[in-house]
Length: 238
Image (cartoon, rainbow, N blue to C red; front, top):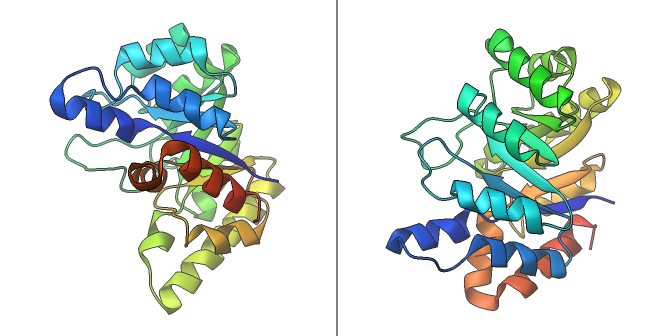
């Protein structure tokens, strides 16, 4: 049965719009856990556009399930992770001008740059996940670098339509099989909502879904507790 990790970045986005103290992503994370989420995800970006260093520090002390830190594989971010020691670090590509992460890491091209960070994180007993597109070579390289997990980028599937949607879903299925064969734990996320997640859950083999935008969007209308409980039910095959 898959786990749900809730990304609370966009709670911080609302807070930063006014530069105040509310809503607090730490409080939101606690509500998510009480509603059945089995993990909290945050992305500490280099430009600090939403999550702040303070959020990470407090969440490390208060999260009762599992804290997953998404970050770029830079010297600064690796240093922060080694200081805070979250349960998991998910390495993601990052561009200053993007609205949200636009695709998976090019693990093959950036192997040398990633290897050092992965080694340091694993030495600190931090689980390392690589956010990758559902492409065989990227998955193979992730295994060679001794990542613990891959998080399959589902964004292309989520924006595809018709035959394209079916083709992208098949790529995800193939990526799940390849990753498991290589001994990697399989996570998935990006663009998933209360409708398009159902076929992905039905594939089986995904241990954890990390979802943020659609849950926070629904929470604006029905409340965080209900929004999380509804997604937990879907992730568990309900």
